[in-house]
Length: 239
Image 1 (cartoon, rainbow, N blue to C red):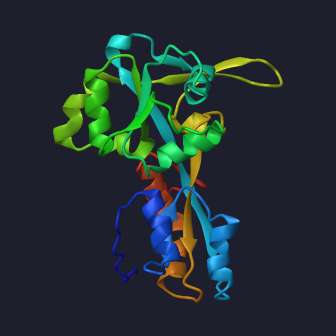
Image 2 (cartoon, helix red, strand yellow; image 1 turned 90 degrees about the vertical axis):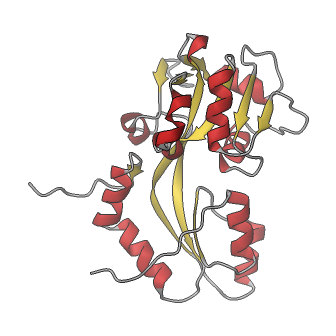
């Protein structure tokens, strides 16, 4: 049986990493690992971290249904981040510290300073509301947040569609249209898939290690699967 009580605090990725480096928390779930510079904080204290991949999330791109076309070209998104001509009016994020923004900026190797077509609002719901009222713009939101919108906010999704992404294989030149469904995530075809890491810097055995083992075990992986995310491994099912 599992008796431990987990106190979960939801914060932006930048805040989570800062809290970890300030030693106010020792275990965090995030979509990035620490940089070499950040790791030196723990190396100086002789603490070796334990990193566990729990599963995979993704960034979902959404647009107003009035845009009609449910397919966006990967190259158009690249152009948006590179400040080149694009048919996309703009891309909106939940806040400037969101992992969604940092992930896509790194993905496209882009400096988004002074990019007026990329901007942030207050939270995930404000992104849904904005896209529901503004055709031509794209919203970037995590797959988990999109799938688990509260009942009172479902009204915004009535005018919203999830976008498929057109990509081209660099070797074969084959063009595919993919989305954040599990089949594409499992085959690593969707370009905005990202791992979910559990970073444990307790420096000793304890609750963090136990939670990591639980989350990576059959029950934890089943929970991730039930949340419509992609587990690292599919837990066996009893028949």
